[in-house]
Image (cartoon, rainbow over all chains, first blue to last red; front, side, top):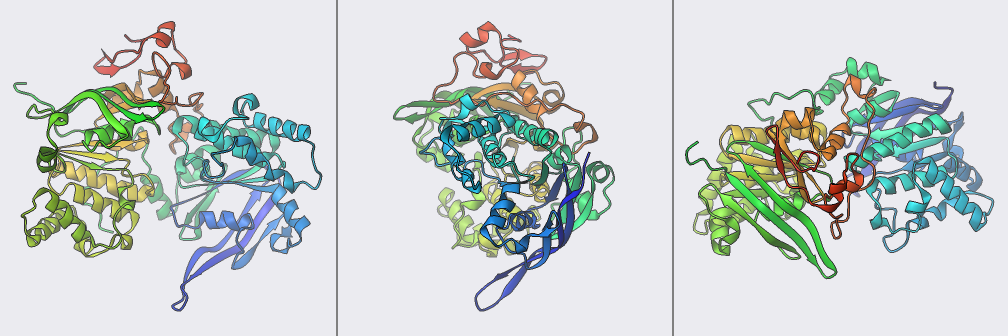
Length: 275
Length: 326
């Protein structure tokens, strides 16, 4: 099902330095290496502060890494400095973020979010061409263009908005989609639609997806491989079925045991933990 | 069952947001009992009125929210909504029922220590109690709940998210209220800290510090871990009330069925399970659909659903609001 490696991170490290006089440094990402194959969905799982989002930002070239490199189709992305190279990279690697509300200006119709994405093309499109492209990408995410275009943000649900944002990234026909907690602010009943869109895109468009989440259940449902992160390091990596059935690391076991499920009921301890 | 009274009985509560261009009907005809020493879960998606219900029950109803009708009966038969402000402050809030509002831990004053905050809170109820005694009760409460006493001497920003939330819970149960209403106490917490917060809530009840807990959340899997009974809300109305096992494994209302089917957990059979979701989006409560508020998204809607608001009827020991069962 999966093909050749398209994105590779090698010993990626990011250290944030804080303080003006008394310098403190925080190692957000610590020597992380992984591969992403064509048509594969991998997920980065971990608690808050484990460095998941920092990795996403480095891959999207929103942050420079302190050390290590990222290879996209064998080329080091830190060498993309010219405008043409950068645009080409961003055309192929698109990000989707947590908040489906923030990108919309509530005074304007939702169609406006599509305006800027067309700047990534060298060619200027006519209004009709743009409209056609928007409509076809909306159809890819199971939205009816007639139902959503021309509406104001408050008239749409969180799931619909998030799918509009996914549709926006699809206009440039990317190879890799980086989704950073895309469903954490969406209601349960509409969340499923967004997940289905990701799975469909992989099937139909051959997209590779990096799915970042703190929810192991979600990661298990959507992805082929799972990378469990703790304090900036990848502590466990492998096929989701194997990790769920047979976690090796203590941390993964603890993470799995603290996830509430419907069938099992926890035993609550007499004593409260003091941490 | 002589002289049996629930700890709290809500009768036909309606609370609307009064806006210039019309009412937002956030809580419509809510009736339920809170039994002694039970954890009652309230589940629903955002905008279903669960937080509005929590605020209404806590009696701090501020405009534009307005209580339209309904009664809230205490154990001794008093209607809380008819009590005077002075009585409410002296006898009800914090003592009979306490509310932990949503993201309370983010609204705390960063320039005051936790012990000062506790002194303020207790003074509002017992103006004459000396500070030393208040410190003593708070130390005792924190020790009882296995929270380190250094927390009392800290500022809020010095604590981790889980510790903040646990301190907030300890503070709100300081006066041993009969009823604790917790609104999304585990939102924005990591899964492992979430578990410690749930553990704290369970031990509050086990040690008799509070009698009953109402736990409001959108996460059914969390509720499943701690709640005895569950109320499912949709668009301001209660759609189903039942024991946790019944509702999770044999949901009656079409909305509950949809909601349960969207729960994603890391268990081997989830990948084979077809997640259905519920088509459409929740209605705007300014202008809710006529009849059953769920009918535009419902698979098994019949003609009557579009015309008449269904009553909450008893079915197999449960309450359900659906014309298919009425």
